[in-house]
Length: 197
Image 1 (cartoon, one colour):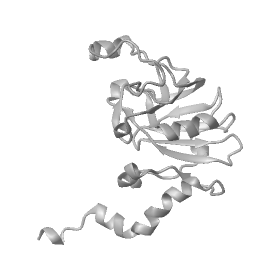
Image 2 (cartoon, rainbow, N blue to C red):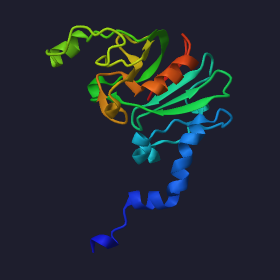
Image 3 (cartoon, helix red, strand yellow):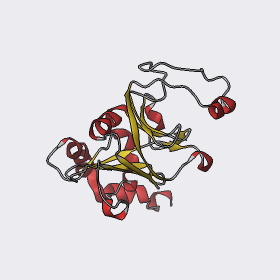
Image 4 (cartoon, rainbow, N blue to C red):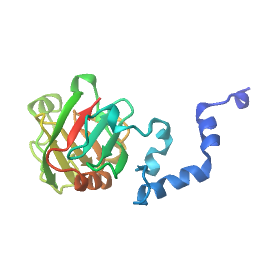
């Protein structure tokens, strides 16, 4: 009887097919493709949560670019100011609703190889954590780039621990693979709009 059970994953795999999945990374690399999902091998198992969204449903305009973070689907969407570029990246999200912040903010600073200092609340929860980690250190949870938001202590940043992407694993920030934050960092400017939903 176990062989007669039809799973959702089996149906999705049959519908998409191996050739369709193999083409996804090529779309992310082709600069002429309008829709460019950034999908790695590690996130293919969760491909159904990635769907193209329209910026008009969330922003009045795309002045200085627009970033939408969907906490539920663990995805970050980016639209350039002239709307010629659209990107979709898998993310890590906060581990609990208490650490999750939603609403409008903006990029107020950008740092290459950012240093990391845990907040007082983090040190209370995790007293054995170090007091500070310099930028560039593989133990640094901010990865290779960080975009600081207007909300204190909140960042969109990279991570050296790729197991965190696609999971509830952060202490409030939005994490991306280092290669994805480097791409996003180069496209965003100070003042890029950010909306977390």
